[in-house]
Image (cartoon, rainbow, N blue to C red; front, side, top):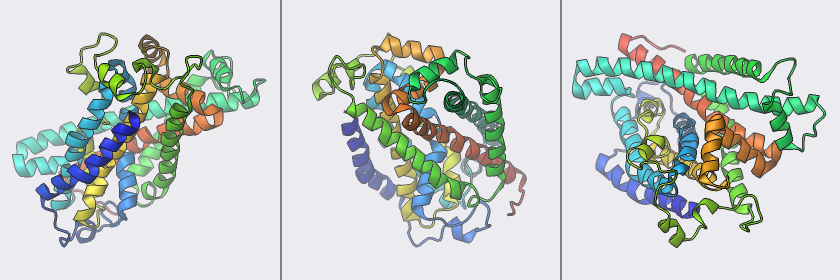
Length: 401
């Protein structure tokens, strides 16, 4: 069913996105702000493939991973919401936000709100956007620091201890119990160090021109993201479906046939579907945060015809990531109560780490976790960057390289 849902997302991109493009009436002959307002900092032309990758990394924080994992508590109906939400809501939202910005000189959402709804609304949205962007940035410091702390304790703790690095689960259990230190630091201290490192990176990514850090290191982040996605799909598909195997694909919905899929649309864990499912899975289906990110790449778009691939396509990519992790949530544990217990014990990050290590071993699992780590980092840095641009536009501050 995962592959069927991915096929539906692709069908939405190649079909419905063209309808949306016609509604907006793009003009490929119109010169974009990347050329008319090129300042060498935020406005500059970039290739559409690089912009697509940056846009995907910008919008895909922990939302399309943690949200679908928790959304798996509702059963396979979560996958249906991801597909429908992406095609008809999230991708449309991102495309129109990006194109509105392209047509208005790369303006941010507060400026667009002011243009169409008046100055009082602009002032309110300015304050709201800055506060929420700063909060998002702070949150996206904590989650990657937690995962990086866990990786550090497992890898370097094993190297300095007596446990074989091949025994990934034993290493992790000892590290979690506090039986391992790294360079004299316990796990809490290691997490604090990573928090400082990530925050310093955020400052640099916020202030430097977009092509100096973001444009150069994001391709490496993209490679980790690709490895994570392909690796987890491989882990799910290669698992033996027999009852003797501890991991059987989609066992929580009793198989992967169409008949079983549609017979299991009732919610799991006695949770009300409305409105909680749609709040649990926002990134991966529909997210207002993306409205703050699309203008960043609107300032680098070379041609209006490329916007469909960049903005609509990036959201479809996020939907694929969400489907993968929803499948992990539906299949990794023996039952839905076990999934709920794991989430309560260590948040969805525990599910990410445990499933990655189990499917791909310590080395492959760590690379998969790194593919998860880059998502909140790349959303956090651009959250701060977007906050800087909103403040600069409000006070009419010139941004120089």
